[in-house]
Length: 105
Image (cartoon, rainbow, N blue to C red; front, top):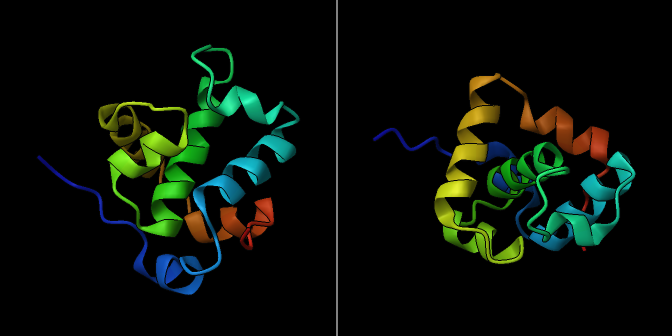
């Protein structure tokens, strides 16, 4: 099974400052959805939640399990799927961090 490594450069630069909650807040604000949607079971905000999970994993270097806990108790396989989807798209987490204004708590 291929484990996609988090972006080490981003993780080392921001892991002390950025938290899963800070990433959730930044993505929800930019997407114009309530923060509670990030933890909900609704699928309507699923794509945005997946993006936030990917960024949380790439930026903090947290495990899939830890990221899932930060998103309302989502299963680690849900987080892994989100990370694979966005990694496959070839998105640059570093530029996304700047775009979303993720700097920390």
